[in-house]
Image (cartoon, rainbow, N blue to C red; front, side, top):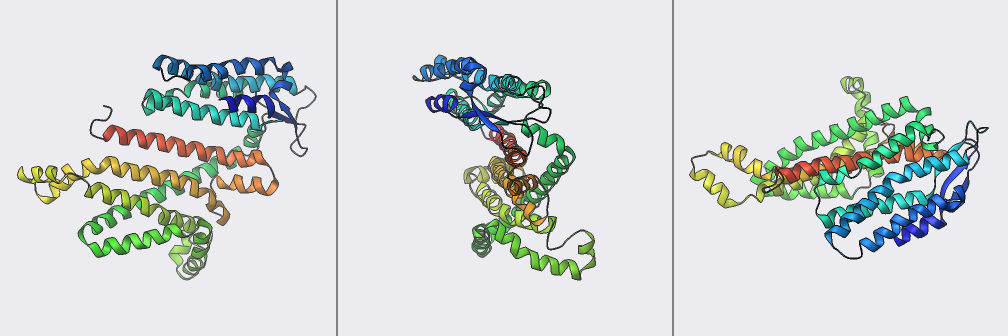
Amino acid sequence: MLSAVAAWLTLDAVSVAPNRIVSGSGYSALEVMNGWPALLLVLPMVAVVVLAWRSDPKRLQLSLGAVVALLTLLPLWLSAATAVLVESDMPRARVGIGSALWLLLFLLLLMLLELRARLRLSRPKGWLLLVPMGAGWWLALALWLEPLALLREYQARSDQFISALAMHLVLVGAAVAASLVLASLLALAMRRHAGVRRIGFGVLNFLQTIPSLALFGLLLAPLAWLGSRIDWLSAIGVSGIGWAPAFLALLGYSLLPMVRNIHVALEEVDPAVIESARGMGMNRRQVFLQVRLPLALPVVLEGIRITTVQAIGLTAVAALIGAGGLGTFIFQGLGQAAMDMVLLGALPIIGLALVADALIGSLSERLRPGGAA
C-alpha cells in the first residue's frame, strides 16, 4: 500500500487531450483541484497499512472495508477531475486514465484478494465485495465520464464491439465444448490402453510447445487446400484464414489440460469406494455413471476452468488471421498507437477470463466433498 501511495502522489493520474489526434497532457493527482481530494484518498490508504499490520480478524475486516471504499471512490474522483480539467469549449476532449490510477486500481484489487484469503471468505462473498466498485463505475460512466477516451472509443465502435465480443465467445465456446468431448473419449481410451496414454500425452505435449502464431501459420496451407478442393468445406467457410484455423488451433491447445484433468480425475477415485459399489451389485456402467464420474466431476471442472481461461486469452491472437474477436481492437490499436483502443479489446478479455474462472471455480468448490451447500 505504501507503493500505491507513492504512485498516487507522484505519477500522472489523468491525461487530457483536445481530440483523438493530439497527444494529451498528464496531470498528477496533486495537480487536480489543488490536491486536497487526492490527499483525502491517501488517508484510507494509510489506514489500510496500519490496520493490516497485525492479522487480527477485526482489523482485517476494517482494512477490507477501507479497500472497498477506495475502489468505490476512484471513479468518483475521476469524474470530479474530468469536470475540473475539461472546459466547456472542448467538445471533443478525451480524458485518459493515467498510470497512477491504473497502478492504484491494480494494487487495491491485489489487496482485496489478499484480505479475502486471510479472512477465508468464499468466492461468492469475494465477488460481492466488487459490487460497490461496479456501481461507482456505472454511475460515473452514465452521468459524468462522457469525455473518457475509453468510452468514446466504445461509442464510436459499439456495433463492431458487440460483433467482436460475440465472435470471441463463439470461438471460445466451440473450442472448449469440442475439447471436452474429444478429451473425454481420449481419457477413456487412455485408461484402457497404456500405449494410447503414452502416444496421446506425447502428441498433446508437443502441440503445447508450438507457439500460437506458428500453429496458426502451419494451418493456413492445408486448410486453404481443403477449402479449394472440397465444396462443402468451402461452403461453411473453411479456408486458410478466418474461423477454421483459429478453431483448430484453440482446440489443439485446449486438449492437453482437459485430457490430463479428466484422466487424473477418473484414476484418482478411491479404489475402496469402487469396490464398495461393486459389492452392492452395481455393474461396470453403473459404477462409472453413479460413482466414479460424480466423484471425478470437481477435478473435471477444474480442467474446464483452466481450458476456458486459456482459450479466452488465446482467442485474441486469432484476430491476426481474420477470425475476428476482441483481439481485433488490440492489434488495430497497436497499429494506430491508440492505447485506448487496445484497452477496449484487452479489458473485456480480462473481465471474461475472471468471470469464467470465478463461476467455474465456484461450481467446482461446491461439488467437492465437504464443499459449500
